[in-house]
Length: 486
Image (cartoon, rainbow, N blue to C red; front, side, top):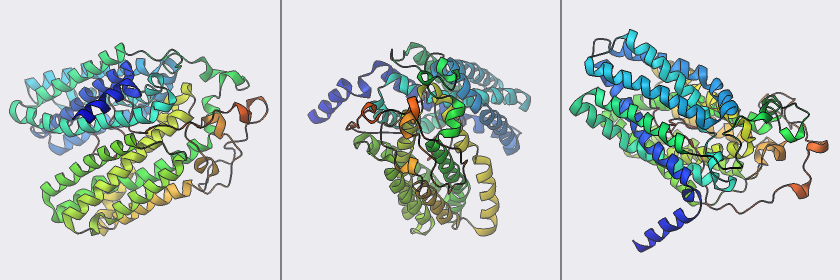
């Protein structure tokens, strides 16, 4: 007990937890995540308890999902223009009002489609704007060397909320109906907005103020790269986007369609619940590991090792010997994915110029979320004709091969922890992904930093990297849990 208390005091004396605004962020996250899951339980129960059934539920979710995807690019632009914290605060205020109205409607009875659809559109659009903005906040609160651990602690808080939230939401709905759970969700948005209002960025952080450098002339070296330049020359971003597209195409349909079908064939509803719990526990384990170990000097190689482990575990799921074997496989996959998520997000936050983080993360989130409809549609058709089992080795192989293919790219495999965009700009190597040949021309002339001017590699303490430095983030590099609808 004394040793644990000593470690706790040490954690608060230095590192991310010593930063007041980071602790504020965590308090908002835990409240917000619990609210998310209360909503995720209450909304389907409210709709399915009426006459609309699954058709109405699917329509409402579509009214939520489509605006969310469409507004993600807008969220990146406005976050970089006006500051991520301000954009998140406005989005949370809009969602608090929308969910509050929904709670009032639920108290009066079962809402109709005409009432639910506009609320779902507001929630979806606000969520899409919020998502990329959420990735800009942590770099304004923490120093670069603390981002890895900060991301890991943030992710663990989200995952703990994911374990507590469904139970709280289910109990509220079971004993009191849907409206109290919806009211809790509305209140959690208010808590999130208050936390964001009280937070203040570091004095040297630029992401929370309208950045003039984002629109500066391309020839102005002091202003840094423009977003267009980053898209053309950011070879690391190109590789990451391709990996995200392939991995999420493979993952989403397998987990959302093939896994429930596999459980339905021989494990039952209780078995499926066990598998979903293992996904959450595995993700939490991966975040804990990421928070405990030192940051890898070459993140790409760690990324590849984790991808191979993920691929092998996912491929083994239907062949590992029933529920116990499948649960172990799923847990191993989620643990490796949880660690990999943190590696990926921290790498992008460090590499991307601060004034462009919102737009870069909006592209990555489009790659992660935009593949969902295609992946689940293909899986639904394929599982019907081929069965569930073949999808797991195919998806596992695709995930492993995508990341191993990324290692053929010099910019990806040569990335070192702490490198930023200027340090990784170089001539484009061979292009196995078929990307633009114009990517990453060499940094020359006055823009090329002299070797003695480049920062030396510092022994980064313990890392942790993913899943959202957000007060209300249910998205991940690979989504290791079913997505909350809130």
